[in-house]
Amino acid sequence: MDVKTLREIQRKEKMSPYLQDIGKDFYQALREYLGRVLNGIKEAKDSDTSNLALRLAEFENIKNIVNDLYETRERKIVSNALYYVKSGDAVEAKNLVKEEEEVLRKIVDLLKSKRQAVLDRTLQGERLVQEEKPVKWPDERKPAQGLKQEFLTVRVLKDLPSIVGVDGRVYGAFKTEDLVTMPRANAETFIHRGVAEMVDVDK
Image (cartoon, rainbow, N blue to C red):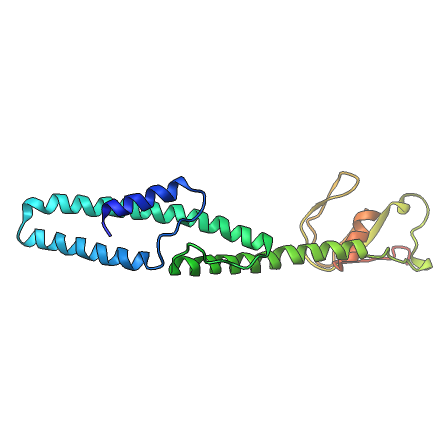
């Protein structure tokens, strides 16, 4: 491997939207090449200082090429990971160096686990809300006629942030054991969630 070969690999990678085949032993070959370059720098320091600046410039140039090449391939690997997570297809190692294959599989595993943890729980919660049955109020707890047809008084069972009621007013924040009169729709939501219980104000 040499600078010319590296530049050509970099050029092909940047021109294509797909990962290019750079060889399974690419990073091993690169480490060996950089080892030779560093040895040349050491020798120049010891005996040939006139050539030291050229060798240092060559090393910096190589680092820039390698960093750019890695970041270009990294973006493609992340894009591929998103594809595998969404499609459910098996991960393929085509044109991946061994180290890159490990990165891809770890990203896919992480994204899948987080997707399941967040989306599945969220959607499950949505289904539970849809399946909730209306509260059946005992006859003796039915609100009286007039204003109490639309408002209920509840006892708050845990600390809660403030909410905007269906009447446009702000209620809360709430503290445990607070007695709050609020629109029936909001009160029933609290009761369904198990964070409040109805209070019979007529007793």
